[in-house]
Image (tube, rainbow, N blue to C red):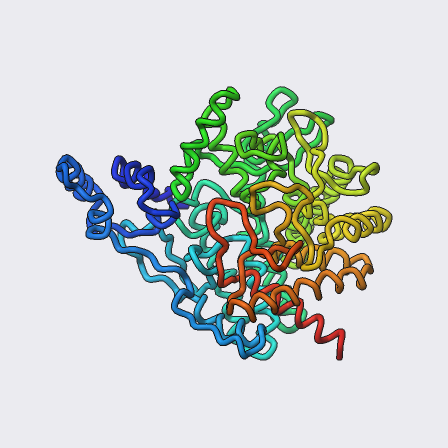
Length: 520
């Protein structure tokens, strides 16, 4: 494994601070995606010399010495006279990037050896968990276009490459993402590729081919497990539960402001300082929430309202542990296919133990839902969120639990445009009234797994209609949608709603294919 290359804040020092704190870019991610035109040390020396001039123009300096990024798919012109499905089919090529040659020496982009699909808009790189949902649509369209199966295979190869290079799959292929991962969907990607790969023998070979990377993914999430004790209950992504046993949390090793949100996070310390929260603690909790993919949600806030009370690293998330259960069962199957019986039995035991821990830690019989667990307070968190549906997605819920979750989903989460993410209204984008494509798929698949097909299809059809209506009105597929009131746009978060959009496209194609099968 290679050492981690420096990120823009490390390369550019005072120039980075001055640009990001100046506000010359409305979106802090813009500057970290700019590429210096010369060696950073020389550039910094030039900056220090010119910055002393009273008529110095910071933006002019940046424009002269950096290459600016463009929004992914920004040059695509939509045709709203075609169907949403045809629009998406045309858009795949615009969101697909060729295999990377070696980037400029100081580009924050980490090169990838195979083609890949980016989400769109400000997201000009791959993102880990986004890619699985993009793959759902590519796998469906791959039934008539084999090149899309090749694209899936290439993206799985890219993630295997990142695991081999860094020991894990980063949040995305940028140097400033290399201190954290995202929800562990690699096992699901490998299974999706296997299912798209023809004969049963070919499917088995896919699992065996990626067994080394699946094992490294497992080791990454379990690093520090042997150090846990009743006194030392938190080590990186591992948590010793108060009642015994171990589960996982989200984490990030770098307690500094994220380079792509630098100004906002430094400013936030003004609100946390009176609360006795150190900047390092704040930054770690923010970064851990980014690893969750839910950045941000009141799910992570102790007061369920304000970012200043974020305490992600205290929380043992139900969805993360369900995904790790799936990883363990995938490893069990891969080892069995490889003839590694002892290892297969070991992973099987781990999966069984985790399944039991998920039941005892997260299920709440009073609310009829799975909740996250606050390992510091030693109690479940009060919020109901769609993360609580993941046990249905990975087939861990009992039929009785699934029935109760089904009723709660129908009563509280089902809205005119699909499934709302949480029941909590806040200023954050992973809360009411927003709906997100990946969670629409999780709920749809989870309900279908337990036979609640009518409700699953009801939520599916409302989401598809919302996507269609917004496309006809705007010519765009969005990152997220207001599922409560379709006449209003989505809101919340640290950046504007993005269009493109990889995972929305993928989930739409997959859900629409199921709808067509149902009709025919």
